[in-house]
Image (cartoon, rainbow, N blue to C red; front, side):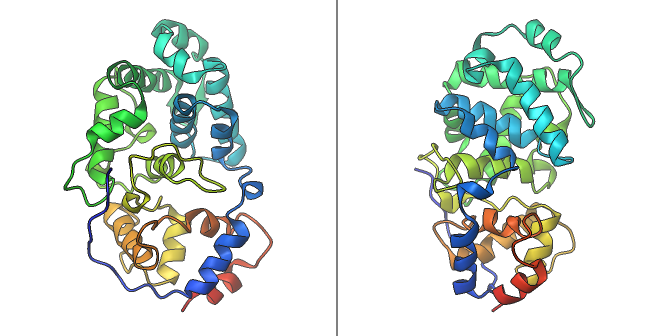
Length: 274
């Protein structure tokens, strides 16, 4: 099993009891919609959930309606079993089916090429989980090295696609969407479906976007000026001080702030500051 090694930890300026209260309030299935995680719930097989999760997370940029429409379009083409379709379908058939697909600057050709790399992973390793596990190393302090190898494998086995569809931490990117995919696959609770039990939640890195970056600055979990990989790791270290075995535990609940209208965000953030 992949387990986390200790690293530098920033003292978190957080009211832990209030943070736990936020988790209990919002970390519920009823608050998932319209998160693209909903698409993963459509499937029962772990293999199908992996493929749906990778597609949903990779396309999770832009406005919510566009994201949902784009993810639904790709999954509709892949049918009842995305894993079986990716494994068995001919590339030119998928290319025809997604010829007019467009998600902002991502084209159908980008998606089909990425799925070609996924197909290679399924044939060689059996599943995306097993590819990720094979990409890990005993000395890794978090998922970043394995994530880099995972993304490099899929890209290397593809015909090439826009890097933003499946970014790599090798570029210094925080890889928010790829870390979001890992959160879905590794953690198991009322929100995250889990299934990758070989990977410890302690290894996860916070899926860092501008919203989480602003919240983390408020908590003084980072003083860095850019929301890059180093910042994501620093923020994760702060949460790891509170929850060593599950530093991404509060990600979903915190990102509901600003999405849901139950609580004024600034008032809630003020109550969380220790």
